[in-house]
Length: 328
Image (cartoon, rainbow, N blue to C red; front, side, top):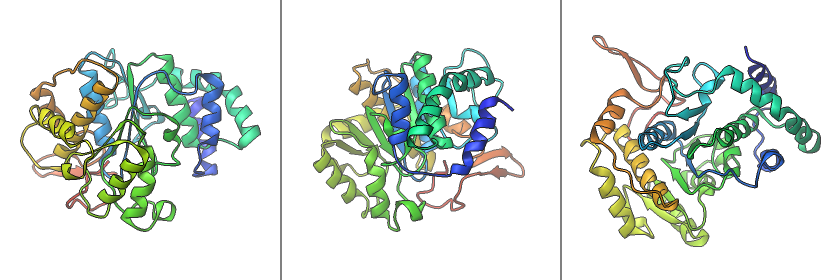
């Protein structure tokens, strides 16, 4: 077990403590107020992990170095911090590009003075705050071109929301963590929408009639562009949204599965990112999309490990595979 794993395991006793003051103080000790690379911040109840993986694969295929931060891990902490494309087959397959044990321990050693200082001033950073800080710092040290960051819980007070994403994504809103986020779809949507930024695009696959008015009202008061890919009538940027969706669909095979929706969400987020940072629009080969859909996005989530007879494993918190469920 690495030194970082031992350190993080000790921090788990501090539990979840919403708030951005500790991670903000950590980041201000090592760098400029914000990471120096563009970020896509992806939240939602279902589908955010798959959407993160799809978006990272699409961007990495465009000859760019992309950081990927996700949670939780399946086997080892290393899985949560990855840089793609990986230069060689990873030892932690199926998680190519995962940070090595040596890099993890090097990060911890460099960060300990900052972690101790913030602990003395504001209280001990939690396990998730610590790992989020280390992931963002690792991406800066490795000079990624962009990073795809998965929200841990909710949105507004999640540690990942310390960033200033150039594109935000909310996949879907369902009843999750009701003790912290609220007892209704509308209340939870109000928390998750906290990851949107003024003047930027928020992409969502949400269609619920109770959630979209929350998003639409926030887009007007906070000044962001709302791109609901399956309900363009709610957009305040409809012409551009419909053009982006049409462009994205050119590369995606026909289908209506939850993973088709996750891939469409990722494709539209890619288009929004390239526009936001003035990157040339890079085409996506349909064969890549077919491969992503065939392989699946996240190990251990609705993963078929055997056929005849079929054996499927799923580590998601929900067992409902009905409409709207998209695993991680």
